[in-house]
Image (cartoon, rainbow, N blue to C red; front, top):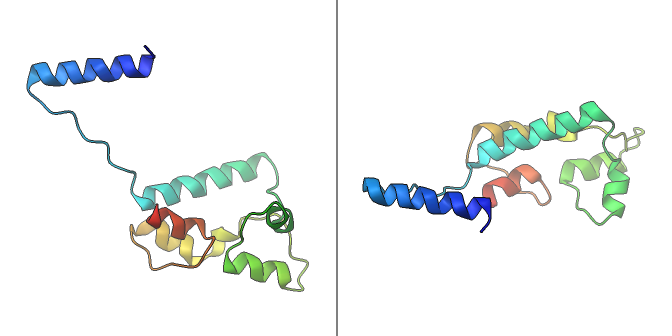
Length: 114
């Protein structure tokens, strides 16, 4: 028996003896997921540059509408920066559990749906 299963059994047994029901697992709120995602990306940036958007797209991953705009803009784009840090979707997603964002390939929009 794995340690995880053993501890789950112990918790169930203790809950049964005390007459308490074990707490149901609830999914993390979308705003927490958004804040964690932002923190993880910023931590990744601290250890080195992010992958360029063109490489991300070539690997078959989708880009949000703003990332697509950056890739076609004639501003020497394709710099590996975290474009979400200046996007309003990030701010909304970090503060609201049902933010009004819906465009495809936006991780912050996907947190509210998943």
